[in-house]
Image (cartoon, rainbow, N blue to C red; front, side, top):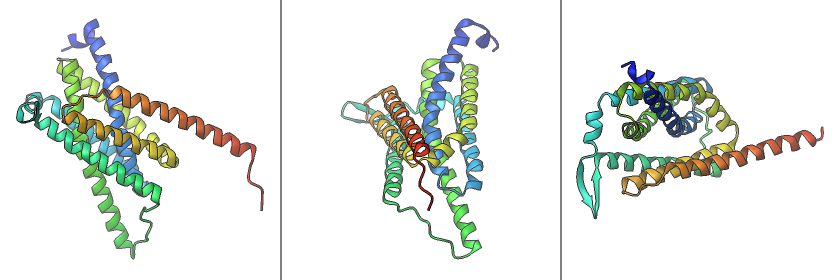
Amino acid sequence: MLESFTTAEGLSALLSLTAMEVVLGIDNLVFISVLTGKLPPEQRRHITRIGVGAALVLRVGMLFAISWIMHLTSVLFHLGSHGVTWKHLILLAGGLFLMWKSTTEIYEKVEHKEDHAEAKSGEDAAKKAASSAFGAIAQIIGIDLVFSIDSIATAVGMVDDVPVMVVAMLVAVTSMMVFAGSIGAFVEKHPSMKILALSFLLLIGALLVAEALGQHVSKGYIYFAMGFSVLVELLNLRFRKKAAAAHPPAAS
């Protein structure tokens, strides 16, 4: 087992897979930050930890059920020349859910349809908060399942050593846990960043649907486009901050 981490080949595989899993974890972080942003501030950190913890449990659990993962690639039926498997159906469901969720969230954000109505009593408020938290956890775990299958399939294609996969997953999910809170707070603070995040999820959803239908598109294109958009928006935020400092509002 230790040979996996002491040879040049093993270390190279570990570093490559870890980097890949960290990048793939961006999907999860964006989705979690969008969902937790609608919860009361005191619940966000707790729900984020549950979501990231679920991602870790699902990924590591699936690593030790690789035979089950491989079974998901058995063809169930054909659509033309494309053989549809359980993996494709799961990716299709996850992709459609992401597209639906991101579209409705963008609509609410742009049209200002967010629910700001006050609860009639403290009991009603508690029930509403518990319901929202439960719904957020259920959605996070559901999308974690989709991303985990995608992540494990990538890991199995890159490395055939389970200990290396486990360590890479642990490092990637630990990184998610460290940065989830700050990313969520930043996205929630800047509405334009939230729109970008939702657009990113919409693209990822379309990507999953395309893959489910047999059309492989490299995620690198999506990450590059999103990275460039975020860079432009960061420059805009910096420019607006400088402009506001240079021209403060006049005192009334």
